[in-house]
Length: 199
Image (cartoon, rainbow, N blue to C red):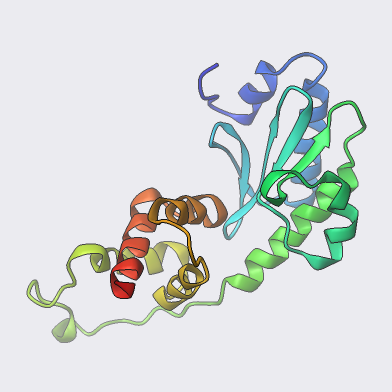
């Protein structure tokens, strides 16, 4: 099967016994995050609001839920569902705990909101705007658009990348794309800049 165009297409392509499960999980996510943007990402249903909220996908015997949940208040409830890399695996042979799915979504929304500070836009006087000679080149040339698009100062991203000790360039790029919904070009530019500063 190719990449589905929508979550409706994703559910329709699932087996008859799995479709009701996917529909119920989708409804639980929408109940907890009615304003989240729904789309297909990495070929699975994905929801975004100030960053990644949740992905889910049906496999042969289980439903996978991503990314890992960091909320310590949910750790005990989620312990039995932990899979590789702390992603969640819910057996399709058992009823999916939809109330727990809603709690996960609500937790992710709070986490995303806490991580997104209010950014005040500053007007740059015309006479002090950058000339072609002073404009940054290379990865740094992406920084203004990154700050504008994701609402975070560059130091925020530098600090996050500094915590990814021991990870390779593309591992960090993919982490930014999955965990923070950053575009590939932007993620690549930030990581390249940070790793160049370390070298």
